[in-house]
Length: 85
Image (cartoon, rainbow, N blue to C red; front, side):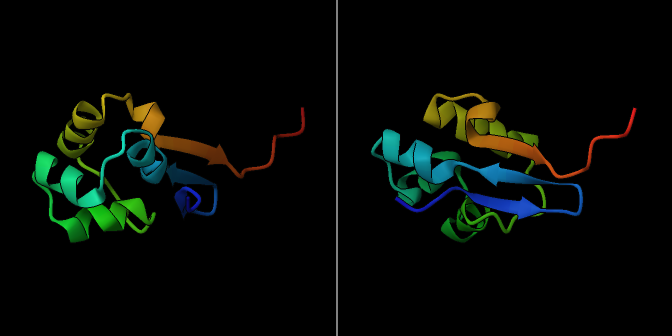
């Protein structure tokens, strides 16, 4: 199974774990696209971590179909250095 994909900025990274969730639920990307009403191309952009944004309505539809929480689908890693105290 390929690793989760991410979208990086200077301060952190959002990782999209769509492949993991699809694999666990034995669902294809095409099937999910049909269920949530997105094009396969747009869902693929999200899956590969190339999306710059996601609508709450899209996130809600994906979570509904995959029976998951947004935190199951997305993870944030902070790259900023801790401040000296």
